Image (cartoon, rainbow over all chains, first blue to last red; front, side):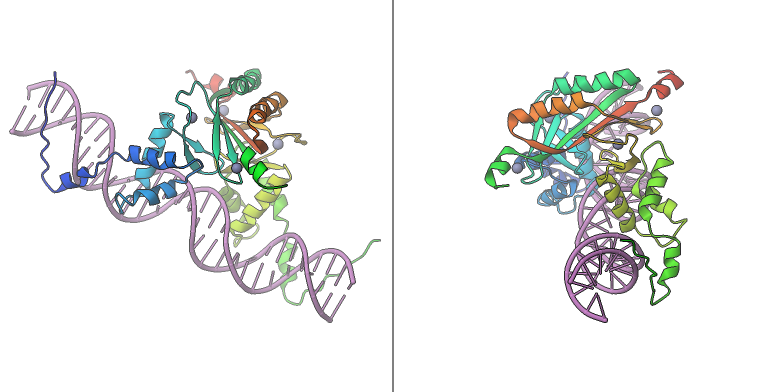
Amino acid sequence: MIRYIISIYHDGSMDKHKQPSDWHTKVLAVLRKNSGAVSAYEVLGELRVFNPKIAPPTVYRALNALAERGEVHRLESMNAYVASRSLKHQHAPVLSICDDCGRVEEYLAPQVISALSDITGQTGFTSTRQVIELHGRCISCRDRVTS
Amino acid sequence: MIRYIISIYHDGSMDKHKQPSDWHTKVLAVLRKNSGAVSAYEVLGELRVFNPKIAPPTVYRALNALAERGEVHRLESMNAYVASRSLKHQHAPVLSICDDCGRVEEYLAPQVISALSDITGQTGFTSTRQVIELHGRCISCRDRVTS
DNA sequence: ACCTGTTATGATACGTTATATCATATCTAT
DNA sequence: ATAGATATGATATAACGTATCATAACAGGT
Ligand SMILES: [Zn+2]
Ligand SMILES: [Zn+2]
Ligand SMILES: [Zn+2]
Ligand SMILES: [Zn+2]
């Protein structure tokens, strides 16, 4: 059954919602613009374009929701976030972070995950979340400067 | 050549140093007392026993120095610290963190590290630091509760 | 159309984690 | 002694994250 609903707003709140309330989409767009890590407060700054009064909990709620859906990854070693590159996540990604240019790449590495579960299997530890982050230097940064 | 030095303090500063200034040792002791993650500010709290006026930079300096020497590990996914268990680190450890009891274990896993360098090797990324943290449930917590 | 319980969003305030900066003290070598 | 390098103390503030409560939107039953 399809219902057509005309919402009635008892105050001016409808106006607020013309500039629509889907922050998730906007947060994701900010992250996708960027090839590297973006902090929650950087996202917050960019979203002030749409609403100068936006507050941290709005951003963190969006980031957490997107992370649960696998659309963004939190870079635990940087307290920052990055948009996901690969569509499906069978398992946790390996994230490489170039400390020179900030670029983050994402790899699906079943061998790594299974090597990890070999280890934990021996000890009885049951892992529900894997954080695998590699810091270093990407190939273009290595080519760019002599060292 | 051995030199015997009698330090001369032009003010009362010698008294401050009877309660000696090696915070590194004290920070490490606090972490070793604990089988799990300890936040920098928890360490700070414990060190107030020795000097109520101790400030965050002192603790962070000690933690960073200890981490560089491999005596403690920073748990990036918890913004906390743990004393190292294994004496020598040929390479980055795998850290398992029980989200129930907080216990942290440390594994040396050459297979994991080499699986990781296989991946990055293909892309030209040169990794200088590896963060590998597993969240989940340790065996004693699994046995303790039915689930 | 109304009531009701549930979920999402807005808003305020606060808690936690980390560092910049500058002053002082200590050490080392000359 | 002096000077440069390194470590520590002290203050302030920046950066990151969440608890809490109020309001709004949504969906189901009457
Ligand atoms: Zn991804
Ligand atoms: Zn780079
Ligand atoms: Zn260790
Ligand atoms: Zn446990």
